[in-house]
Image (cartoon, rainbow, N blue to C red; front, side, top):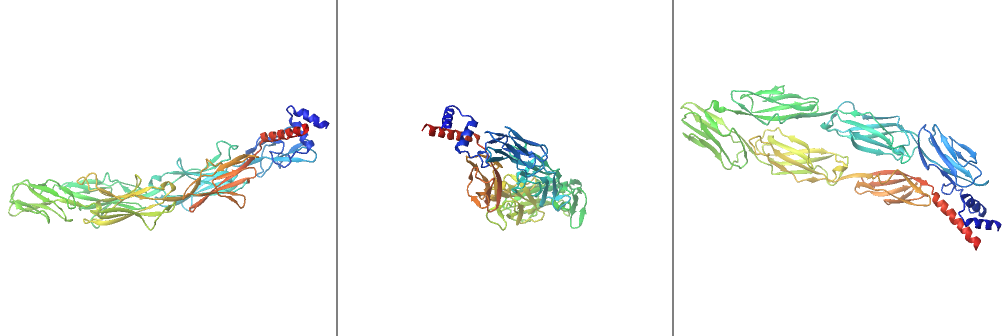
Length: 615
């Protein structure tokens, strides 16, 4: 009873920690020795430490009650049992990967409790290197290649992120779920399909260790040496310097130039007739040059051809008539009118044509006129009889065109959504267009020109053409609009702007595997003992992914929100899954001690004793 009176008197004030401890020892209500920090009366200066391999570390441990001995147990830096009020676990050159330092305290001769320090030992990679798998030398535009990033001797791998860059643009990143403390080697690959604009592009990969708030800031990272790629591509002929129709005056010569960009540098040649080939960028043309010549730009990647029509002007230099137009472009079933006038006295002149012929007359101006032109291969000729024995003539150059009846776009052998990363073939069908040698088919994604195709067939009548385009959609293409466009580039005499017909848009749906929002779900989540926290796993994917949490071996929770507490396993994994793929993010649950809660709990126990005494 003396003890009770003494205790009651002391409790009227503010009892000290030692007094509380003494009271609990006497009444047998202490329960510090379960090994958890919230129950064991010691406090660590840091709840979690992140230390570089072979680096130094120092963590203090101090008691919150009187004791008969405390110390640090560890395979490195152990501190023998002492009665001091603060002891430090210290290692100047940490080399043990799986070290587990424990601060223990003996509160009496029978009971001991302990707190384990959460420690992460990390090592940046010895090297990070980038290479091309099974390939050396230049790449070919449009083909697929595999890049490989090798990360050597890094720990712990579950905190590693490997990032891929082209120049300053982040292309992709990979995370790891293996739970390993010792250094490992990791290999990551990336598929690329370079285009001509990628010639000289720099690729690199970067290994970054995201060690949480206790780790170094910014997170340590190692970057590979840059990989510069050479992309070889088929030639592109400069059409601005080489028009599709080139005039030349009879009796004179002209030079036309064919320039082409390509890698390797293309060879340039001209095809004149069946077997006549000129190897030069510059071609000299004259009235004796064939009506159609072809520039051919070639390297070992491919060949590009551009057709040029040589239009001979000035036939009146020999034949004394003049046409009001040297070349006309007429829409099929459209109207046309061209004047022919003599420059000398004559015995008669006229127009010969299968439509709109003009009989011979002594007039000084005659007009070839058709109001509804329907003959594709018409060749109007103005002739003049300068005397009773001599006649000469000038042929009018005429192009009859017809815009397509329809232009349509479709996917070859596929319906429904597309899967990210797979290859698909789009098809553009152009129906009933003429003349095809002036046709250009263009492919667009949104407002971006992707590709264009020219035609070299020499045909005057309408034809059908089919053009294809290979695509490999990514998640950003979900909802993208593709279309194809048929344009007739008929030269300066044709309609301006050039007539074109566009397909209806093709909207694609791209399905892709989930991406977990890491900004909302850190890799390390603290939780105070005795309390619970909610963590949220959000993921983007198409179709919308299902979210689940894996806790331990067989425990699975199907929800975006997971409630964690001190009883939650040390590692939990969020799994975002759809039928395209599965993405997993590993989270470490770090249990922190709640000393305010311990003090409050002790105060409640003391208050309970006081009530009992007064009762």
